[in-house]
Image 1: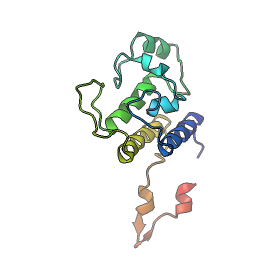
Image 2: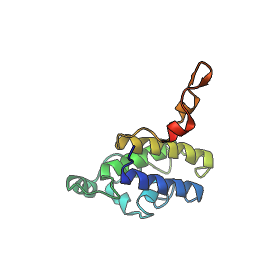
Image 3: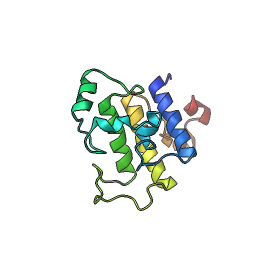
Image 4: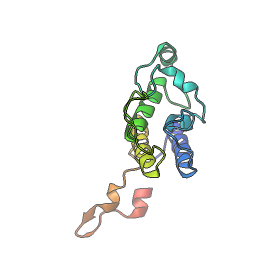
Length: 153
């Protein structure tokens, strides 16, 4: 199965950010989208509210022109960020009085957010979810139904 380049690059960046402790949902250069977009914050100008799916004028112009940011359209960028924030426990769109997780940089919180983002990225590229490990535990006659090698390839 050939993985699209944008998906592969995004997965590598998110993997590295998670393991290097540089994934931060409260920093637009270090959140899921910030990492996918090489730690730049220019993407935040695509919407007026952080965590919203509503493109503003600038975002709409880029969307209509077919502009891509590391392979992702402005609308996809907003979807990725919203999924990440909500999976991490934030209420979107972000506002200082909306609920947020007690420790947004906790590894468990970040893993849940990362899991949701990877699932969405795979869905956007019509790929099987690379985070789906359920086949590892399927059994037939009390034996594993699939070998680990078959699942990984």
